[in-house]
Image 1 (spheres, helix red, strand yellow):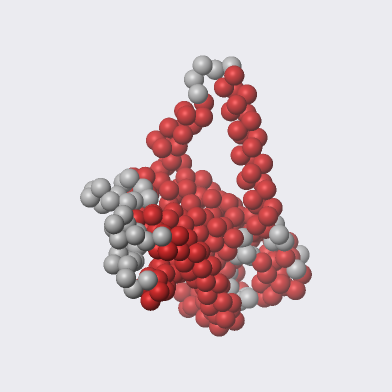
Image 2 (cartoon, helix red, strand yellow):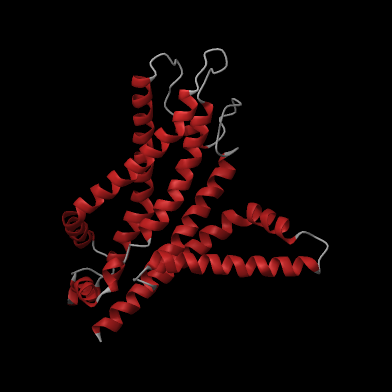
Length: 273
C-alpha cells in the first residue's frame, strides 16, 4: 500500500489491472458486442427490406437510401450505446460489497479511472463501428442471397461520414462539421461518465433526466428572453456553437473527466474512513 500511495501511475501495475479486469469481464464484453451487432443487423435488414422488395429494374439503379440510413443509424447508435454503456462505468460502486472490492484493488485511483476512460472513450466507439460494419456486411450477404437479381446490393462506404467532393451521399459536408459532431458526442458521453460516479444506481436514467431538465429550463429561458429581444436567440446560439464548439466542447469534456476522477478519489477516501 505504501508503494501505491507514493506512485500516481505505474505501467506494470496498470497492466496487471487491465489483465485482471479483462479476465474477469471478457464474457460480458463479448456479450455486449454481440448484442450491439444483433440489434444493428436486425434494424438494417428490417429497413432495407422495403428498398429491395420493391425493386424495379426500370426505376431502381442503386440503394442510396440504405447507405444514407446506415450512416445516420451509425451516428444514433453511437450516441445510444456510448451513453448507455458509459453509464455503467462505475456500476461496482452501487453496493457496499462492490465499493469494498473496488477499494481493495491494488491500483491507484488514477489507474482505476484511466482504465475505464480507455474502455469507454477509446475502445467502445471502435466496437460500435465494428458492430455496424459487420451488420452492414450481414445485410449485403442476406439480401444478395434472397434477391440475387438485384445488381446493386453493396456495402456502405463509411468514409462518406464526411463529403468526398464527388456529389455522393455523406453524413457531414466536411471534416469541420464532422469533427464538431464527434466533439459534441464525446462531450455528451463525458456527462454520462460523470453521472455514473455521481449516481452509481440507475445512472443512465438520472443523468438523462438531468440533461433533459437542464435543456428544457435553458430552452424556456431562451424563449422568454427572445420575447424581449428582436434577434432570434436560438439561431444566435446555433451560430455560437458552430463558431466556438471546437474550443468549448473539449474544455467542457476535460472538466467533466477531471470532476469524474476527483469524485472517484473522494468516494475512495470516504469509504476508507
